[in-house]
Amino acid sequence: MQRRVINRLQLDTVFWASMAIGTVLGLFVFAASFGAGLLFDDPTVGPLLRVMALNFVIGSATTVPSVVLARLMRFKANFWINMLTVVIRTVAAVACAFAGLGMWSLVIGALVGTVANTALYFACAPYLPRWRYHGAFIARTWRTSAGYFGNTALYYVNMNLDLLLIGRQLGAAPLGYYQNARSLTEEIRGRIAMPIQQVLFPAFSALQADPERFRQLVLRAGRLLAAVVVPIGFGVSANAQELVLVLYGEQWRAMIPVMAMFGLSAALRAGTAIASPLFNANDRVGLAFRYNAAGTVLTIAGVLAAMPFGIEVVAASVALTSLYVLLPARTAFGLIGLGSRHLLQVLGPPVAAAALMWLATSALRATWTAPPALALALHVGAGAVVYLVALHLLARQFLQDFRQAFALLRSRA
Image (cartoon, rainbow, N blue to C red; front, top):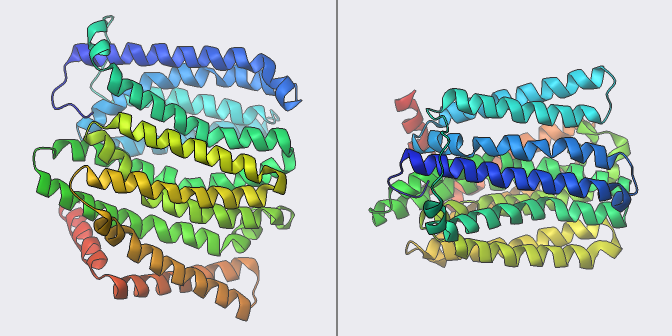
């Protein structure tokens, strides 16, 4: 993605290397599944993992087709591929659930979704692999490739190790509260910030020879991203009580404080997501890996320290350690000549306006009582008004950015 020129031999080499890595990971999960039942004291875990290991093998085939589409800036095709994958996966899981397959419904749904996603990428991308491999190319690019692989591995650890520790130490019920709260808030990053990262990486890479234009695009994209994701995270935190009661029911009330903490964490992590494509576009993947490794150690240490005090304290620890993301974000800005002042201009107004929205929502809840669904609608509406007014008063540049973005969308519609 970062290179200006590539050829078919390089694509084929990366494809087979990705398939090899996916196969190794799948075999590792398959082998580990035989001990997973003992670890979780549940004999059903092993068979589930053995089937889900196929996702690593099948999913690795999408690496090159997805990159080809991104280099061609065909993001609309990528959107529809992901949308259709979600629909197919959901339909398959629900159909299996109605057929009485229980927990296997989720496994089958995920596997069907992976197969569908792979087929859709090959149907849309102008690429078919050939039986050839250039080992020297992998050797020359190993340092960068290892950084990408390491960052992906760290992301997987970050997304799963805390769940393993909580499930092992605190049991199934606390794990359910914790995982559901985190899954809902992670949608902010997974459905908004990460797709934007995929768009910005090739866009930033194409502007390496034009530093001033590069900096202006980073600032504009950073402001737009922060203005959207930060209030969503703060809104989830402020409305955690109503969201849990409406979406899950009274029996999930213990999840409320956990979701409130994760909302704040998700806001900050998603708001600084622009750092990743900056590191990648400047070919500083190794530096990003070192920052991510330190962040992973910090998060795990926080989780372990908070574990004896319950999932609420664990969630608070995760929210506190998420402040660390400001450090790599500042470093990423420095790679293109931007400083702390610019990072503050990007994050400061949305965070301040979202904090006022959070306080206004809390005050409204304290002074007015309504059924959860009605209260949620009222809080979201009032909170949106407070946030937009506050953001406009704090920094009118954000309104100008949105106007330019909407004008660009209209011109291309």
